[in-house]
Amino acid sequence: MNVQDYLQRDAVALAEAVRSGETTASELLQLALKQSERAQSKTNALCKLMEREARAQLAKLADGPFTGVPFLIKDCAQDYAGLPTAYGSKALSGIVASEHAHVVRRYLDAGFVIFGKTNLPELALKGVSDSLAFGRVSNPWNAAHTPGGSSGGAAAAVASGVVPMAAGNDGGGSIRIPAACCGLFGLKPSRGLVSSGPGFGEYWFGASGEGVLSRSVRDTASALDVITGSEPGDPFLVAEPGVVYANAVARDPGRLRIGYMAASPIGTEVHAEARLAVENAVKLLQGLGHEVEEATPDIDGAALATSFLHIYFGQVAALVADARGKGARREEFELLTRVLSTLGGAISAGALTTQLLKWNGFARALARFHARYDLLLTPTLAHPPIRHGEGDPSTAEQTLLDMLDRIGLLGLLTRWGALDGMIDKIARDSLQYVPFTQLANLTGTPAMSVPLHWTRDGLPLGVQFVGRLGDEARLLQLARQLEQAQPWFDRLPDWVRDTAAPD
Image 1 (tube, one colour):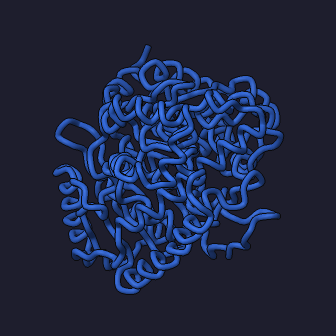
Image 2 (cartoon, helix red, strand yellow):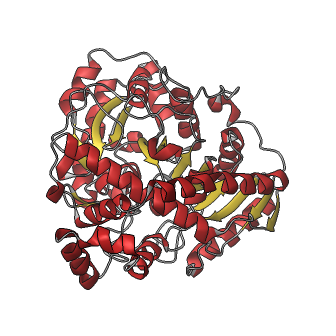
Image 3 (tube, helix red, strand yellow):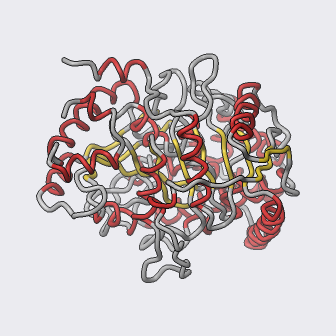
């Protein structure tokens, strides 16, 4: 098998090639390493190469649905025993995992050959991937733009042909955002469907979940079969889905009733290309026989964003405190992380609990919407993939925040409410490009980004579908139908095609 063959097959097809004897796991690893070497200087998708570990895996490969297929894990919550899980941070780069995360063990048991960890923003906190410790990640479609975040390295690796599928996780859109930026399919499963253990019971109070980014819907469906299910010690026993996703994805979804919205739930601007992406998706869906009409869940988007940001700030404070207890130094964290940690530390237990209690209201309102509509359609992003640095706090804002944090006034002024205006502005700026994805995280519902649109500038821009709790099968069935109607698997950046030309 050569690189051209490798790029033309998804993970399911590569596993079939290994089983048939057409190729070997060792040969596929070599092809993946070669493509990674070509792509790394353009994308910086990997923050750690694990070639030695991968070759050790080859000696005792598990017999599973993906035996021999090269794979990448995200350097966040996906612990690999004996290696640090750095979370994109210098402060955490020396803390070594003592055991595999359950999801990593399941990937290995499925036969994947894990040969690297993908890059991300520090502590997975942004919709862009710009870690100071490991360098920013660039979009394979245009290196001047972000691949999204926080699973930006995973998306860049898949979009540049390094692997057909890579692991991600999603606490506020971190699978769907980079999928939309890089022309990939990305599904965030329902809350609790995949174990976060043993390091966590519920990651981000259950807002975050494990999943993959891929170039084919059937890859994602088959991967979900591998990772679905509770583990001993999990806080909840999740009911078995009752379907094999790899089989269910081949079935017709039937005639669906879909409500759509394109206005930002927090009142910020939505780019014309994002609106066009939804308009074109509506026409495609109607052409496939679905009933589609404009409709919006009865949810206060600003209140949901406020609730999300409270959890976001509080989790950063807890993560930083935990890291410091393990030997990390506060000054090793990036400015934004330190500021968010201080803000989170200034939030009272009562205020945090009040915001957590609001999740129930959001979930009930979305359930009422889903009583009428099978799915909600929105843009995944409010804007095409932004340029590096776009949307960052100004130099003056960063300087002021740094000074206030260093002298200890930031937390005090926050408690007094003196910085509410600046904090609200920073929060609004951080969500203005990604206001649509947090709804599924706080309600626990499954959601997917489907690569149906490319801008006039040649950048991908996905659309999002949000489904009922536990209804991954319906999302996958629709995604497969859309994939057949408007294929995207063979759509790769020109330079990736050029590198695959015969030597």
